Amino acid sequence: MGETARVLVVDDDFDFVESLKMMLENQSYEVITAYDGVEGLKKAKEESPDLIILDVMMPNKDGYAVCHELKADPKYNAIPILLLTAVVSNIPTTKYTQRMGMEIEADDYVDKPVTPSELAKRAEALLQ
Amino acid sequence: MLRDANILVIDDEAVIRDGCSRILTKEGYRVKTVEHGEAGLGLIRTEKEPFDILLLDLMMPGISGMEVLEALRTIDPNLIVIVITGFATVESAVDAMKRGAYDFIAKPFTPDQLRIVVNRGLERKSLQREAENLRKEREKSLKDIAYEKSRITAIIHCMVDGILVTDPDSRIVLHNPAATRLLEIEGLEIIDESLRRCVKSEDLARVVTEVLDTEKSKYVEISQEITLGEGTGKVFLRTNTAPVLNEDGEIMGSVTVLHDITQEKQINRMKSDFLTMVSHELRAPVSAVQQQLSVIQEGMAGSITEKQGKMLARAKERTKGVLDLINDLLNVSKLDSDIVVQHKEPTALEDIVRTACELMEPEADTRGIRLKLVASQPLLLVNTDRENMEEVFVNLISNAIKYNVEGGSVTISLMTEGEFLRIDVTDTGIGIPKKDLYRIFDRFYRVKSPQTRTVIGTGLGLPIVKGIIDAHHGSIRVKSTEGKGSAFTILIPKTSG
Image 1 (cartoon, one colour):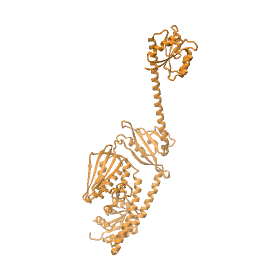
Image 2 (tube, rainbow over the protein chains, first blue to last red):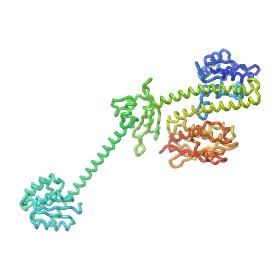
Image 3 (cartoon, each protein chain N blue to C red):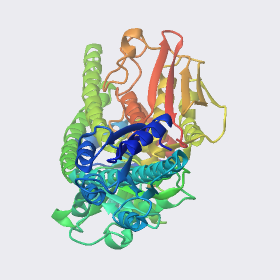
């Protein structure tokens, strides 16, 4: 990839956004931020980022809804989406998180909190 | 024929008395004689063994034979009376028979004539007894049926849960007041009405139809939750519907038990609301803190000293502990609310196990563990809730992988054992210490040892497994040898039970 990839981080928790931003910037990505679903959707459309990292539980519009709208729109459905799931899933964890993520067509999912190396790995894979 | 019959002779002539007595005693009968009517009636009243036959002279001093006959109507109407008449008095014999005598014999008579007439009388007596016994028996069974019916009615009327019984055409044949109260159709005449017409729940009508469908659902028992009413008057019922089978296994109707769970629902709602609040309010800040700690620890917010790094690692471990605890709390609420709701239908267990294996295959691969499925017979059917049963095997297989050793294997085998289906999940892993074995089905219990320290879990997997197996009336047991592996054995009743 020649130029710097641009990543949109959408989460209502300021501290989360901040730490995700630091992790991504450490990987030399350019980071755009939004603090709820509506703002996230707006920025996704305006900025056309290369990757969206999207929290599930947010006020106004939750992550599922944002994901669904973007994936239903042919103009934006090519943007990969990484869902941040804080929903405590059933046991065993992976099975249900996976099902939930797949249903709404997200490209990948990761449980909060996420470690820098995990995030780097997932982001890199989605930006390929 | 009555062998040791009891015979009374009333005659004023000693010759007749003695003659009768001699002849009949020789025949094996017990014979008593008296010489006039009063004494005869007295004996009939007081004799412990009732007389079967009375030989009665009509012409006697004192009260006449006719008067004795009259008196007998109230004392012992079943007594067979043979009147002894003078040769020329056939009219009086006919008269006596109109008054209830069974037969007559004219004086003088031969021993054979006497034997014949007495035997005929005894035949009559024994028929009379048989008829009486039959009548009593019939009366008794009618009484039993009536009693049984009133007892069932009394029992179901006392029940707090509603009961609804239908015939094979979904028409209501029996119900209790609780059923009409819970279904909010009190005061309506619903016997013989179609269930669909009088019950305001499409879900219930559908399930009853499903249970009555001979093709689809032999031996099925369906549990579900139905909702009635709107807004604040909303009522939640748990219904349990099963077919009623006759001796040949044909479906004769259905029975549904209705249990009011509105209050349970409200409490559960409050609990889950509270837990959701806890999840959001606690989990979010704690995970934010943990993520920030990661960033600092990795040096992304400026370089840190070795000592600071160690402390951060420790802090992260502690926040992770808090997160695990929050997760456990949420899983417990899931455990309490999920397992009670079941939709059981005959399912091929092999399919379920296969699906579970497929789900776990990637995890097994990454750990270099082989999964083997051994099914001795194909298509073993069990009445089961598919999702729940899948969870059972995912849990067991996942454990068998997590607590295994590099290059180990997990074998899942299915077979029949008497009335049960038996499934074994056997691993070649680290095993479970004896002291922990009896506690592994307890909530939050986790085996603590150097080998298990790195394995992530909530201590809720096996309690969930046990809860599901219990709900299927099955059993689970475990055998384990430390350092060699563990074997979990599940027994579930076969569908054709």
